Length: 346
Ligand code: FAD
Image 1 (cartoon, rainbow, N blue to C red):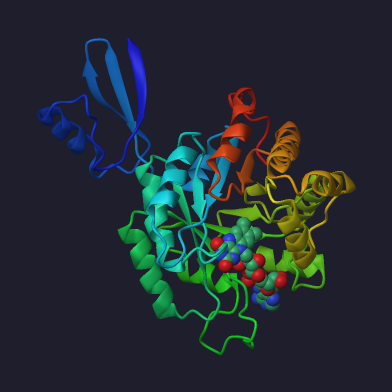
Image 2 (image 1 turned 30 degrees about the vertical axis):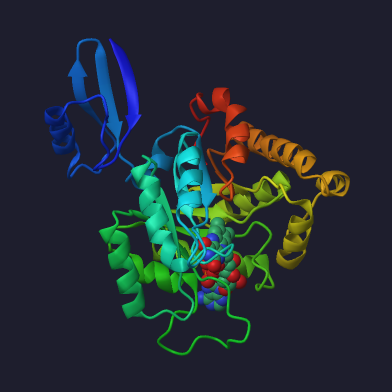
């Protein structure tokens, strides 16, 4: 028997099936939020359907190496179609999940849930980012309701950047990501948070930053994702510190394939991210040539990712930034590695 794996979600139709059998497919899917179901069997063909919704903690516990992607939603009043097109092409690379930013990189906050829902329609579990600075219990309850209504099971709990002219949020309003974790805990979501291998820029000491991270984890995070880094040794040292300080949840390593050399130099200056001289040489040499920078940026990210997997890191998050070509080139070089079982859980 030949097997076909088809990515499906509720409401998706399989053109080859008659109306009656479409109905069977719909019945088979509705209410199911789990992973795979045999939907249809006819002569030599067996069709499996996968629907997107799944908790990331279960993906990470699955024992296989995982690679996830990040996208940002359209800006306010911008069309959804180009972002949907990018999501569909990214989904074809079979990431373990895709995260959708909230108000970052110019994407409108209001569009995060719509794009996250579309990610799941493409058969990929979605992780919706949510920021909380100055939020209230009521505003977060409304956000949680709209995430539930869209079938989103995973939320990355973030503070967000402090508005430049704002003082500390007033009493009763959320000041840190931990407030969001506490507000969403017990509402049925799988919760993630952010962490910083080179210390959050507003925090003077790494020990304090890790203590704040530990507070978030103790409040209910299921996993954390790191800020991008360009020197894996910095990540390894950080991970070892986290484990020593009792942070035991999965840590997903964030890797940014750099395709715009000039921009990244500025971002890293602002965020205090260390740029190894090897990386600086690439930007100096190829930064003005988009095609050459794309080749070099993908090669550098790939080298980082292969090194991470070789050193027992199970989960890598690629800051793909709505660029299917970048994701495709990276994934094409990881097929054999991703087919292997994980060496150990980190
Ligand atoms: P927090 O965990 O609240 O930490 C912020 C600072 O406060 C740190 O210095 C921390 O040490 C300190 N702190 C924490 N708790 C306490 C406490 N109880 N008392 C005193 N100090 C404390 N931004 C967006 O706007 N949209 C996005 O979609 C987005 N996605 C991101 C994804 C990832 C993986 C990462 C790493 C960052 C992302 N960001 C995003 C950026 C993020 O919002 C900023 O880095 C922000 O400045 C901090 O967010 P946080 O959730 O880490 O905050």
